[in-house]
Amino acid sequence: MSSTWHILGAGSLGSLWACRLARAGKAVRLILRDPRRLQAYQRTGGLTLVEQGQASHYAIPAETADAVGPVHRVLIACKAYDAAPAIARLAPRLADDAELILLQNGLGSQDEVAEQAPGVRCIFASSTEGAFREDDWQVQFAGHGTNWLGDPINPAMPEWFDDLAEAGIAAQWSVDILARLWRKLALNCAINPLTVLYDCRNGGLLEHSCEVTILCTELAELLRCCGQPEAAVDLAEEVRRVIQATGNNYSSMYQDVRAGRRTEIHYLLGHACRTAARHGLALPHVERLHRRLVDSLQARGLPRD
Ligand code: NAP
Image 1 (tube, rainbow, N blue to C red):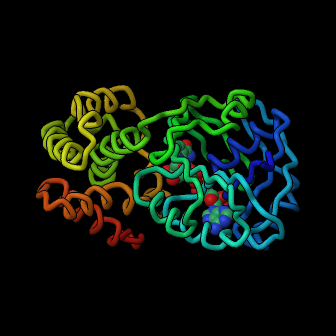
Image 2: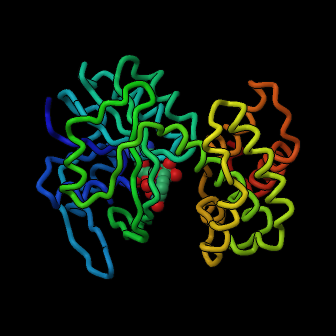
Image 3: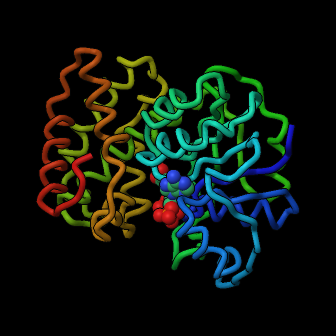
């Protein structure tokens, strides 16, 4: 199998992974959105990674999805709503033994991707690393963390896993990646929408602790109902700890809304509500939160999903 890492999407996380893999001497190729973005990238000549104030430059080759040649391993590093359309375009180039690594936050986009690439191994990731784009083709490594990777269908660790440690990318293989993704989704649902609605930092939710606790009770019920009881354990306590520990931060959803960007609501709170409905489970507070958030996005002229 080819050892090349194709990275689809040179945004914050995609650039962070691409630069570290390239620095470790791994073969890396970027797949960019369209010829216009490819030209813009080629004019700049590479990606810049800024870590602790130190910038380093990597002249990583790039192409679009329509280029020629098979791809064997692709890190999908776009937003959840872009993942399935991106894979639909890339599908004709996916080799029989191709593997996709999906970095998207939330749940639902993984199934959409799998539908576009039947039979292809999909490895799900949940990242606690933080990165943001200072400008096009420039990424700032803002927060160290871990990347949990796993395959809900096949527990075998892929043979390239050691590439990550060699590239200094903190990673752990998880045999229960769905539990991790569900837990993160629940934390996100309990915190992020309220920070948008109350226009506050995470710490501002300490003034709304009753509302947060009721949401956690319903979200824990959802987790138990959809076969993730471990992800439900002490959810409210962890939410409280996260709110305290990140009190000064603005949530990712808050930042998206503030910057006028589309949110990933469809794959977070939206996914929670759709799953509850499928199970015939009534979650009145979670559903009301979803409606309030959709109304708020609409009032700001942002997509409702
Ligand atoms: P981002 O900075 O917006 O980057 C997304 C990139 O995907 C953009 O560069 C975009 O291209 C590209 N893209 C979209 N459609 C494409 C296509 N069809 N072909 C090629 N490229 C395409 O997003 P991000 O912050 O890295 O987030 C990616 C995912 O990771 C999200 O689900 C997010 O929730 C999750 N995540 C992010 C962080 C973080 O700290 N950033 C942490 C944990 C999880 P353009 O540049 O042309 O728009």
